[in-house]
Image 1 (cartoon, rainbow, N blue to C red):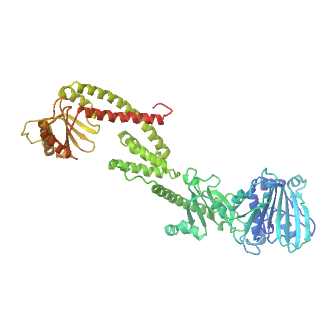
Image 2: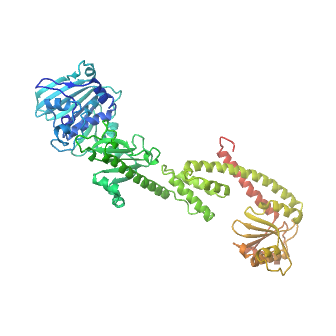
Image 3: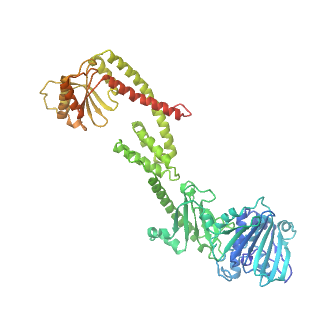
Length: 640
């Protein structure tokens, strides 16, 4: 395992002359304890050494009871001299010393370079043993952190366990980690998950197995353990998935020509902070993690995206080094190419971010299926406005899959859109304010406020209805009492009335529509002429409550209608309806037949004052009931 590594300690030896390490005491702390304090990166350094030593199999055995970890590989091994010159030499640059960046037998691109990684063991333990067999000769030594630090001289002699002993065992290297300082050793499932993302060379040619000696459980580490465990929603392959769109783009071609490849994943829900961002592999080894290539602290996309890129070219040099010692960051600004690489990867991630937002929006729109009759009864302007709000809400809520919240908000908005004040309020909001949480609170609060205000109005209306009831009961004059009263409270006649004119004369109608036309017949007077919200024109003729409706009153009402249809066409969108109001309409057979034919065609209706009263009472009581229901469900902290 360690024979192909970047080794880190110098000594001059003769055969069987022991082992020696020359050092500055602080070096062990800076490059061991202070650099590696967690279990996975320490084990990762040993796996890296095994790979560089052309091993095909690595077994990591953990004795949880005695807190001992043994890492064994079938690599080429090291002899006595190589242990001293290669392994026990601080900062030895293997590639420079050997003149190649490839392993001796398999020609692998070696992952080590600085010759510092094996000091990592002292970040988690006090004692390590290194055993290595090469060409039938076994050598081994032990190093203790406390003894090393206590050495007066700047030279330390590890304890020799075997020196040049013959053996029938096959070539291998074994590192035994003892006196582990961590309170608890990470379980093999979590360790496998962490180690799986640290390399991209796990395959049939290089297998790594974790063994729990207390239970004899075994786990083979694969790259898929980490990335396949993600609850992925969308993924992109680079460069394949971008070829048709970006093939003519300069930065895309630059990345391709430098053999940059990778995969990008997004989750349905936000990632843990430790998972978000991209992993950079150089020569199959993790060189940086959780990178975004730019300051995207406020970008929602950051919380959902992860993935990896393979970028070998930045470590092609045997001398130049652009990777931090702890292998968490790339030194992006250290070179023109690395700076350009960062810039172009940032462009790629921005491209993916836009694609992700569109995919999430399309998916949400597909899930947000409104009933076919959702917009029934609404004007085109209201439908357009709600659809615009819906689109903005979707665009501003790509981070959530809560479709039920969106449906609930749109249902509430549909109800509240009958209030012009609510429509105006929503129209004045900036797009960034149209989020699910904000609009849901607005609709809830508004429903309460509007219902409360309507209840106040309704209570006042009930009092007006009660007064009107007294006028009807006392047979009050239609011209002196009832007409002025209804002029003040037209909603008693019909809550849909938008314009209301009392005592409109034929002459006035003609003058407004035909200024040069003289009125040939007697100038008649309509009690009320009203426009409704649906564009209908309504004639209302009031009779004293006890006046009987006869054929005469019906014919008179028909003359009014014919006159309006002839002389008032421009103001009539959906026809004319006439209402005769009286509490006494006992008619003879001829009158009844005539009225029935008119009622069937929807041209004339006879209503009683009692009907009007009952209708008005019911309409306003519904508001009061609704207000009480809402108040019982939603009670704000502060009085509104």
